[in-house]
Length: 336
Image (cartoon, rainbow, N blue to C red):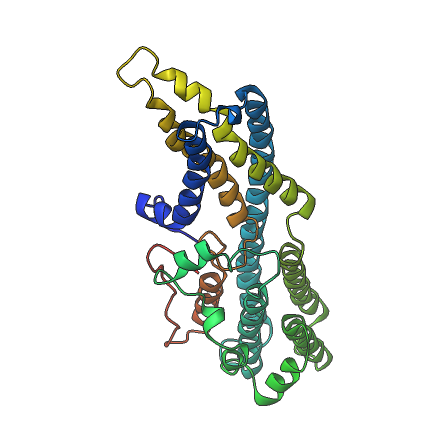
């Protein structure tokens, strides 16, 4: 998540540099053919292209609105995880034996393991995600790192689980789900031995159910992409508009200099201004695409690593632990 007031012009320039150069090259080709080689038949009427641009604006706007909805829902999910974790923690602490109880500490650690397993699962790559695009990779390099890509889940879980629990969890496909199941099993054991009464067990079990709901909602966003039919239509319309735009503006820019000292030269403005217009549409579409997968690890994603660390600090503080983990801070205004 970008934590600055805005992206700097340099950051934006760096992120879009390759695409900008490509758009300028696309605009330059028909201009050169028209002016240098005299292929005046290449000039197209601008009205149909304007209609295409109008349709594209609606489609891009729809996509960006849907992308914002996905990233906002993802933030709400992790906001719920924060609140549910805190309420589960102090309810468990006070009902199951207090701050120094070993079972309470073990269940706290198991919750930290669940947060860890969940964020690792959400950072796994999907075929429709965008972090493998060269522009995103170039922007990432030297600015920030994705912690889940630089470490192994097994090593992270060793900090929270016993050897038996670690081996059991790693043998499962969905590690986060099995960690929640272990918590439920522990609560059942506490109820059976009389540590928890029925009311306390029910309250804590409801907390487990909320975590299951939160995980399922996050997995739904992770595993269900923005519908490919809408994404494909946007791509094809963008491709057609970018290619046709400089052809539709050739005559307009050539006429602009008539009767002035720029007569015969203003047609070259087509390269710049066609490139700018195409850049605006393309960047708006790219912004929507960069936000449509809110867990993939881009600079615009939900900072699930930082949120997980914050929850761990809060819960350890509830046990009056003195050595708390260091909070995760932004690097170059990027928070993961």
